[in-house]
Amino acid sequence: MSPDNKLLPKRIILVRHGESEGNLDTAAYTTTPDPKIQLTESGLLQAQEAGARLHSLISSNPSSPEWRVYFYVSPYDRTRSTLREIGRSFSRRRVIGVREECRIREQDFGNFQVEERMRETKVDRERFGRFFYRFPEGESAADVFDRVSSFLESLWRDIDMNRLHINPSHELNFVIVSHGLTSRVFLMKWFKWTVEQFEALNNPGNTEIRVMELGQGGDYSLAIHHTEEELERWGLSPEMIADQKWRVNAHKGEWKEDCKWYFGDFFHDLADSDKECEAEAAVEEREVHEEVENNMVTNSEDNNEEELCNGQCS
Image (cartoon, rainbow, N blue to C red; front, side, top):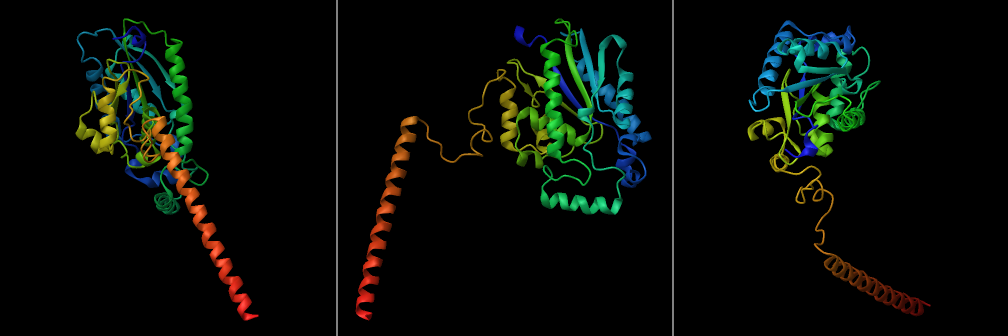
């Protein structure tokens, strides 16, 4: 691995919380504030199993025995409980720290949620668009995007300034215990996906794990740990999957020229060179000039006919 990559985390792992009372029965939100919604018994077991899966994943490389993990967690009770159960699988020496991070909390749907009103609101959201629709007294996914973007900036500063006091000989893993929509927005921001691509994504299941792993060139990819079938199931298009495969060996900061949502979705038939662009502009200018001249001739003929008619009528 490049020396520049030594302090980069080997993996950034997104984990959705376990099954909650609200997942089991949405009526729970009518009497309990969203941040106070608890895990069910099944959710607690899911979180313990997720901890075992995470430990197995992170410790799977025998050439990197000195691995460590740092946790970021949403302040909601269900995410903190999920983290607590995950932690049963890790010894103290493996965990270099944990931070409660408000910016990765759940999308705010308002205060106490009236069940019938919320059903109607979610119908409106489908008509309006899932990304930009703002819940009354709450947030849109676009609002979540803004705070997740701020969180990412802080995360990179933590890395660049070595605020976590990372030992370069240790293989570092970030685990972010959060929520379904927040995790999708995180991936959207990281991989520069468009709003249209975001709206095609499927929500992760309870305690589902999505692994961004560092490739040899210093870029992160979902395609190192996950299969193409998994990425399809998440809602990634063939172009998005191809981009993830390209990132496996891409160098950090490298630009994928044929990535359609960098160019193709915004422009049509861009010229390959300045000369070609100038030639096309000259053709367009000539066509506009000819159209103007034709219009002038047509208007002149119309005026002559009108004058002739006026003369005959008088």
